[in-house]
Length: 123
Image (cartoon, rainbow, N blue to C red; front, side, top):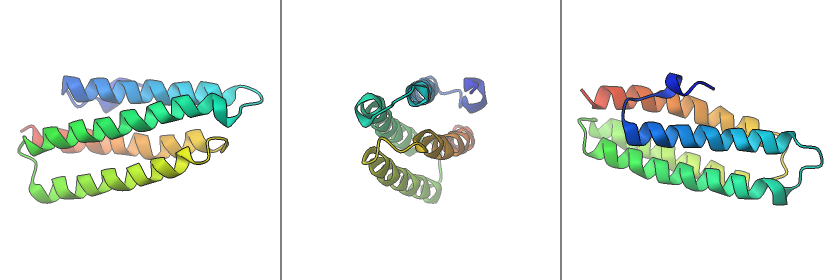
C-alpha cells in the first residue's frame, strides 16, 4: 500500500490515514503467523478500531469547518457510523481468517473517498 495514493494533503488526516494503513499491515502480519488465535490479534484489532473511530471524528470536524456541502457531510457521517458498526462486529470474531480482507475492503475505498471529499471541500 502506497500512502501517496491516499494523501489528501491535510497533514493531520494524512498522518491518521498512514497510521490506519500501518495498523492494518500489523494485522496482516499477525494473521499470517501459524496458530493464530484471537488473543494475539485482538490488541491490534482494537487499536485499529479505536484509531478508525478517532480518525472519523477528526475528519468530520475538518469537514464541518470546511466548505463541504452539508448534504455531503451528513452522508459521510452516516457512512462513518455504518463502518463503526461493521468494525464493532468484526471485533467480536477476531479469529476470522477473512478479517484482513474485510478490513481492507472497507478501508481502502473509504480512504479514496476521503481523498476526493477532502479535496473538494478544501477549495
